[in-house]
Amino acid sequence: MSIPYVKIVYNNSEKKRGKMNTKEKIQAEINSLNEEYLDELYLLIKDFTQSKQHSKKPSFMSTLKQIKIDAPEDFAANL
Image 1 (cartoon, rainbow, N blue to C red):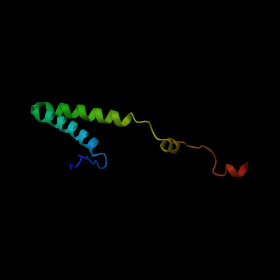
Image 2: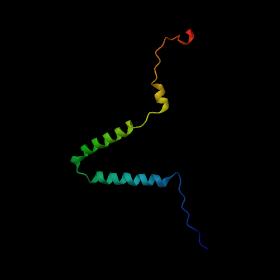
Image 3: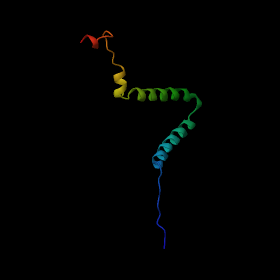
C-alpha cells in the first residue's frame, strides 16, 4: 500500500515564492551591473516607484477629508 503524494500550501506561500524569484532575478541583474551605472539605475527605480504611488486613486475617505465648508460657525442655528 502506497501513500499518495499530498502538497500542503500555507498562506499562499507559492505566490510569495514566485515574487521572491522575481526579486532574485532583479538582484542578479543589479549585481551584474558595473558600479558606474548604479546611480542611474537608482534614479530610474526611484522615479518608477514614485509614479506608481501617485497613480493610485485616492480613497473615498481621503476625498471627504479635503472638503471644506465656508460658512459661519452658527450656520445651522440660523435655519
